[in-house]
Length: 356
Figure (tube, rainbow, N blue to C red):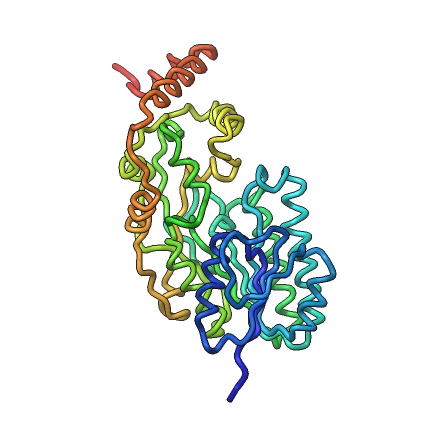
């Protein structure tokens, strides 16, 4: 009988990684599982061996060799500077961590597969973007900030690694924004606000990936060995205005020159961490083509983008306008801010348009 896969998953304390290892633990063709993280997982690990460690630490290289790992799933990328302890620490963990992990993989003779959890944010968000991005498309403007910039660099290092180790299959999964009942994301905190900040005059297209689809795609990448780059998102798009209505929230339109200031106010309240790339996403949106996921990878998402968001709203028990006092207070704060900067005429002009 052939031996099963020996898999190492980084960032195993995250909710999504926990769902993945739970699925892999049920498979007879996965012989051994190792989870690495600096944090202790809050979810149970039935037959996954937990190693407390940083991917930048040489201990990971020893684990790869001693455990004869043949498959690595890299999921430990930080998405928020606030949770990482600042932008400098975020970049250190993300980019330097990936470089160190890939260097360890380079010297692991048993390795045959590397799976990278990436993001559609690598395409950026611009007004000149195509209707949908294909995997071969390049961003009009390369991301210059935060998670999107880190993900772009990490993908570059992963591709360079695959060229040096042509005996290793590389799979890069570019996920749209995660939604669901168990996995936290930027959209969870954004739609937990009583009023959702929007950019005045813009209604971007959004795509979502349900957590169940994300786990299924990752599981298939580990066990079925389809190398390449794949966009992962539910079919269709949801406009931001639709998402706000589905969540029972109210929009809080902000004039474009003052979006960064309002985002900073939201960050200081610790209710949501709106990064610069998220602000551009809320202005221009983004949509990707998933034909390669269906035709080459062989997976059809169970949830459309709208169905994924509706399930997120239901399972997170988001209720519209229950916190009415918070809505009124936030609207007063925004109006006070605009009044201080004498923007009421600007807003009225954008709303009414030219006369005569």
